[in-house]
Amino acid sequence: MKCHTIEEKLSAYQDGELSVSEKEQVERHLDSCQSCREQQVKIQQTWQSLGDLQEIPTPAGFYGRITQKIHHSPRQGLIGALQWGNWGFKALPSAVITSITLAIGILFGTYVGNSLAKFQPFHRPIVFSEESLLSSLKMFEPVPPGTLSDGYERLMSSVQLHIENESHPK
Amino acid sequence: MDKQTPSEELMARVSEGDDYAFQILANRHQASVLNMIYRFMGDRSKSEDLAQETFLQVWRAAKSYQRKSKFTTWLYRICVNLCLNEIKSARRKKWLQFFLNAPDSKHPENKTLIDESSNPEDLLLARERSRQITNVLQSLPENQRIALILKRYVDLSYEEISHVLGCSVSAVDSLIVRAKRTLQKKLEKS
Image 1 (cartoon, each protein chain N blue to C red):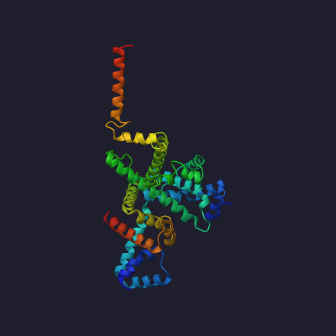
Image 2: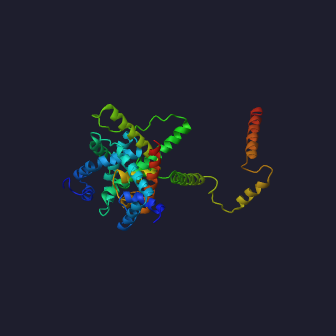
Image 3: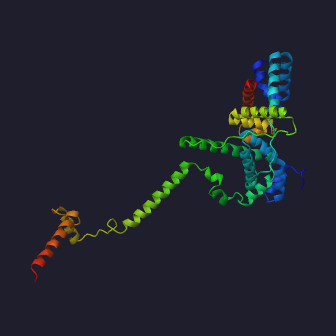
């Protein structure tokens, strides 16, 4: 077997993760190959040096603090999962939250819009009558009824009438 | 029920609301969980918070535990997820601080427990060595670091690590091989 193939297996060999046959193959190769043996020693040294990393002690009252937290929060259930501050809820993607907010906004806007539209002038029932026909023909008059110009004309005529009444009292 | 009771059996009792079983479980695994997190995060106070959060999640999610799965695999999966979430959150905070031009007030402590009875010179050397290894570990990519830590310090098999990380055994092998190579190079340099 080639050195490259063995080098790939040295880590698993050291960790005791090879099958019996693979382990034998590696050991046979190591017996005959100085370079791979050196590589194996280096891996071993690196692994051992990781043992120099010291352990930290469990602080006093560690379990007590866990139980405190437990008593201040319920077990994970549907309600617990939906609580604000729960990490699962926080993990909801912002795109989903934005979409929900937008959908609520559209629904609310539609509801408000429809409620206002019930009054004037969109939902007024259209009934054909002679009066309505004549009224619609007024659209072609110089000052169509209901427009700003019509309002201005009415205002001015009422002001004029008021002035005339005052200057010529009956 | 005593200290010899398997963790899987204790966990089954925890899922029925048994506080005492939870206490035995927490006492049994707290040191390894705390040290695993510390080695991964490199920050002592954050590690203590995350270790407590891990046991809190164990309690909360007890009902979802399936007895056929190994307890330690389930426990470390919770632990790893919390660590990765914390790293993501820290990364977001870092970006925010960068944009707001605010200085980062918290730095990893990298404090380790050293036998105080040793002579000062040994103490200093051991601290320095421990700091070097912590730094080298922290320089590894997260997936390589976590695979290596679960193998070296928690002594899980490749198969168990694959269950914790949710990947194949060959992927775990590859992660550990790459981690060892990087460590070897960096430790040789230092």
